[in-house]
Image (cartoon, rainbow, N blue to C red):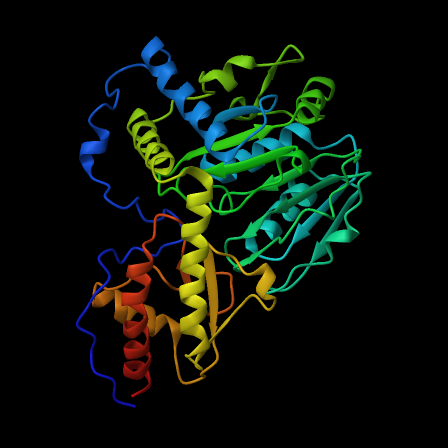
Length: 374
């Protein structure tokens, strides 16, 4: 097959699933007010961090009685902090259908060594039966499978009168999907995903039920300092007002504030969701006319609008060669499947990605496919 090399290129070829593309129009000028060389514990430093919390609450629609904190080590640190601090009093059900869910299941069983753990698994491309999770137990799950492209469609399976806590890894869902906060007791995300922030900073939102667990439960294992949310049996309220556990990057803080301001300016969460869904629709149109690829997510209702994962059904196409060719052409960067996922392609389609860049990319994907099979 001979396909002419496309002439138009994406204005931004960054389609990585983390760190993700910066917001449209981003420049270093947005960092001009960064509080560099200052202490994060100064009044000005704490004010900046508090703004991140306040703006995140408003943008995501997080209830007023939920605590929100900035924590170390991105979303991974936020999830681990929750697992190590909160689990133990009840049995635990873990829902796993991609690499991160598998990691949380392993950490709970092998590292925390909890005895009463049930893991409900599904292969890449599918969800497990969510109704197997018991409201009498703590439930750990991702809302969106960043490495599988499969998301939870709704929260009807989570009981309102549950006894256990729901601990949700929402890092590739926050700012792109509507999260049912009343169903979520612990929710985590990072700056490096949907708003294209810089890495290493995570966030955690705690319901009143989660705070009650923190203040009533003392884990039987030691807690590192960066995991401690309580002091003398009481919640460390300062953490949820901008007094971070460890030193944050005030340059990264300024960058995230810039992204939050942009999100507010374009219309808030509905606009962010609309942009991500429009990007998914564009990819769906291309896949429908491209017989050599198919979505990894088998159920359209469960298809992610951020981390869009595809399998290559043409055995003659080597996905790694295709991705490398487009990177060499400086057309698309980091579009290979996650290292533990089935071989294929993955395109980040969150709100910071322009639909026009995806439309410009598709002819290049078809051209690269022809090149690697020639």
